[in-house]
Amino acid sequence: MSVRPLALCILLVTLPLLMSFRLQPAAAEREALLYDVRAAFVTAREDVPALLVTETDRLVNDAILTTMRGRVLPRAILAIRVEHHKAVPALLGGKREATVTVEAVAVANGETIAEGTFTTSVFSLRREPLELLLAEKIAARIASEFRLTREGPVTLATALFAAP
Image (cartoon, rainbow, N blue to C red; front, side, top):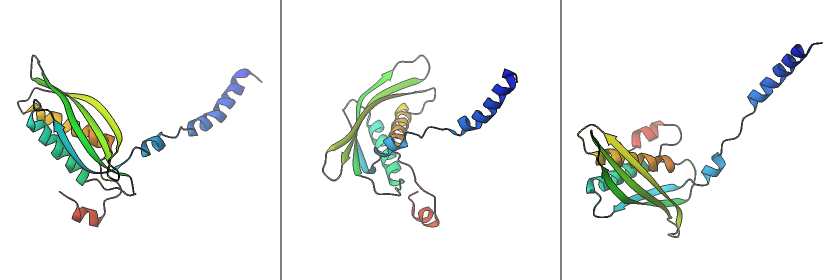
């Protein structure tokens, strides 16, 4: 028997076994970081535009209100601080950059249970205020990290009584 047919047979037998093997996602580690976020507030220094602060606060709170959890999780409140905000000069359009710190504070005892900092920026050629775009990006990042989305199937009851 030659080597080629033997290698082909081994490959045909082992290939389905290798294709069925998959690593489990690291969801178990991320599940421990899920919280039932009840509220959020955004603060900043006086040099940060008020439009950025109010719009970020509104968008994050809207995401919190539309989130439904299917199981009991530790309750938390988010303290969001816009640490630095700067307008970066650009040849065309405009660019804004912000550094944001988010703390998750336990409702039960007031302790900080999670904290993180990220920097984000937006660029636009349009004339609309860039602070609105930056607020959307900040809120989307926070919603993504804390999974502030609707969980579970939409039923008639959730469709009728959900906030618009």
